[in-house]
Length: 299
Image 1: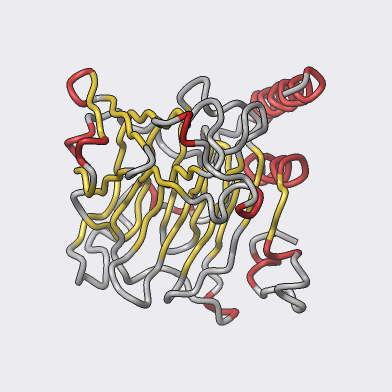
Image 2 (image 1 turned 135 degrees about the vertical axis):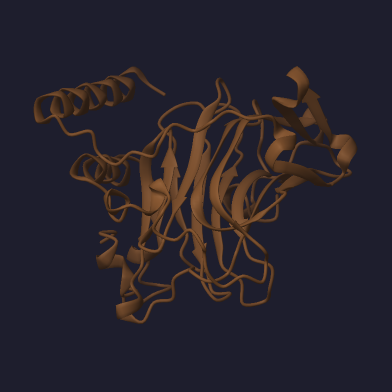
């Protein structure tokens, strides 16, 4: 990232901190995530020999080679909650690779909440793609450049999901919100428990420049590092249709039904400076803008 862009980032951060001090607003930022070992909340799902454990399982490393990638899933299924993990992405030439962190239900008419980190050629920026599926229907992609190098240090990626909204956070900065727009005829995930998954895999048929940049297997193995496997959700069987603790958890409270003013300003900053694709403004795919876009202030 060039010096001018860094100066812009720090200037924005300074302005936001000063504004908060002056206003005295604490906002509705998610509660601090609790760092727990991998095995407390997760287990491997495939290619177990491609996962390495460090510090007693507090850190893990996923590996991708030309034969296989690997992945893991949560032990439980959840209806609503706050889910976070810290990831250090594949460094160097990561073109063709995808590091995914997502929630999904277990049937054909599935709901899904996606973070997908799309690798790139060396020194080019990572792209973060998000998507929301409801009733098996997605097509709600948004893509941003991250304002930092995600391969140098661990950064936090989290989802806040309740009856009112889904919020995607990067280091507690909201990068996307998907509001419950049932009154507009838009389905919202509310009755299908989801498991949480993460994986590292090869997708060079589409991931980097639409598949033009292929994976360079001479750079393998590709590795992504993880820690702080936080889950604070309403645990449920996969067949449950409601959350028994609805309205009793911190992420269910009134202040988490919407973003506060500071969060909306932060989201606007991300959209203005780092968004490179938004389905809401894609008139080739959607000649008429999807009705939820104005509700989510995406257009």
